[in-house]
Length: 395
Image (tube, rainbow, N blue to C red):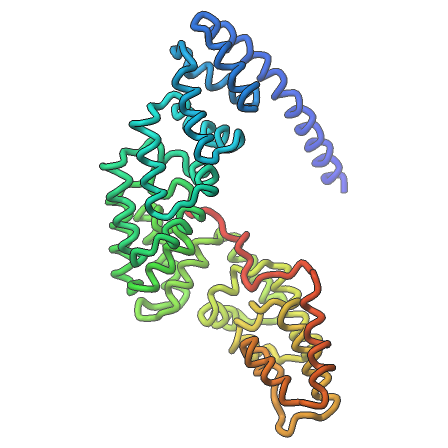
């Protein structure tokens, strides 16, 4: 308890201390920026950024300090007018300048317009331009002919020339091609293909976890080696799913999921089997995993062996699928409507249409069954089958 108190006090002190830091930092930077920029009229740039574009003072100071040689606002105003004409908000411009402040002083016709048009031709719609480039501002710094065009063509080839998937890659990994050369991407792709990950599996992996393709080759090889050590083989179509999952999780987080399963009585062999049959299970949040196991074992009375043989059962949404179907199944059983014994697990595996068709067979009780099932459609914070937030950047 004493340790906790000390830790709490220490944390409070750190928060208090850090709260003082920005003010002193701003004051120091103010004098630094003022003294260094006033001689080249950069107070005008500072005022323009803060008053016209709502930049924070800290960001404006930083830009003024870095670009003290700029003596005119002509280029900056031209850039801002161009960006705003394409739907950029002040927040988009500030975000873009945070990563690539040199954009504020770029030649619109040579550096910006051709790149915006290039992505528009690929299908980027006007309302999305500001958000896209504010999240991928480093694209503005790349050569169109030497970097962007060949890189995009290369990625599209992997994706099957699907432009929609191309933008999904960018949304999941900001600045995807700006920071990496084609040679690095091609080497990683070549290695993955040598591991049996080809065609639709390769394109699916690129869409879902593009960071894998940006890893150092040595790190990627280590990742694949870990998956192979877990019992997967290069002949298995499950290898790609194992690589995806293991790239999302740190080794510590992966270990915690494993230990959580063991805490419910699953053996080490059980855990290994569950991971091999449903690698995505380990991307499910610990809370969802815990609640799912408790429900199936304590409420639905599943034997653990069922979950070991069909671990994907734990990936279903409790709110939207499992509990509503369980309620319906209980009514059917209580009224003895089934002529043949049927397991709840078989009911869970039905698609939505198949399940509704299953209910429709019980004509006299269909209304009651539908009401029991459709309650889950009321507004609620439903959980998804996989917790994407558990994904962490790959090295």
